[in-house]
Length: 177
Image (cartoon, one colour):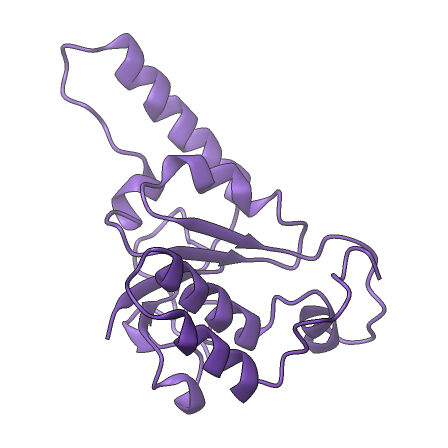
């Protein structure tokens, strides 16, 4: 099994993240992605983010300090420390995708942002996530697609996930609906 960081929210103040029943929001241990049905896919780590803007601010400050102090040892931002390595990162949020993209340039791995771009037609948070393709199935598909694009798995695995989850691949993008 390949590893993938499935980031939804990354707790800035503490590396230890509180366990929760909502696996995509905060779990502090290596888990299989979201539930037993996803166990065949990939191993993942899931974090909780309190503020993408604070993480980006920290990363900018570290980047500036390193640029202005070239002879001192390089510092690492909180994002760089927690998301080190080449495993793909999927950031899913109930805000527009531009919000998690604030930290995308500070990671070395492939970074995929999922968000609720546009106007929702949903009465519950679950319906909102389904409409905007940021639910657990789309997070799993995004992670598998990132791994396929990196050559770690075959594209047939992504196709199998799309079929298993019943995703309409010809649907109008939610931001145009």
